[in-house]
Length: 207
Image (cartoon, rainbow, N blue to C red; front, side, top):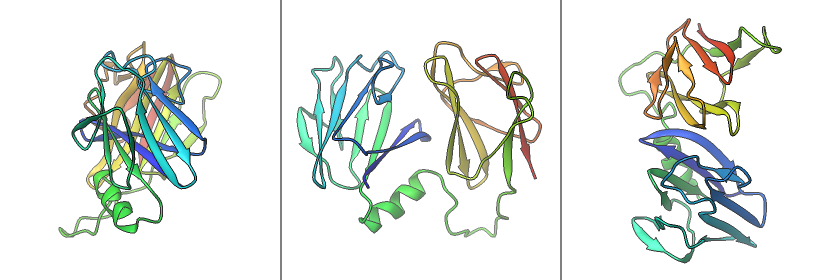
């Protein structure tokens, strides 16, 4: 099944499986893939599936849609293509293209073959410490784990070879880490760090 891996400044923020015939991308909250950035149009582009083929079409967006650095109006996507919308890069991965899958894993910052003898990462989790879900723990088992409320505040925690990184994805209210506003550039997480999203406090625990 084809999927898209969305990243900004090298930090992967979400993975989206393409399961529908039409998947819309844009800034408005009703899109299938919401990219909350002023450089992105309300309805920016649409992905259309026809059998095993996937076509990307720009919806007359203000800043355009690019595939592998070239502006497009409508184009069939190949596994490994990189879509650019504003500052966001979206890697198109078609399962079955094993070489693309390997490339994606490295680009997503997953743990690759250790060449420096680095120790494997200790297991980590996010523990909710306030609100109605207090006490709930979410294990960080995936390369990318998104947390928060869509449209209000969403952050993504990405597993990297050196540790875990958190970055803001979207929302009107900036999440905070240890009381400091969190941006989209990504920040290393350490055991005991406290995140606050949409009024809910969570603690990062590792080991």
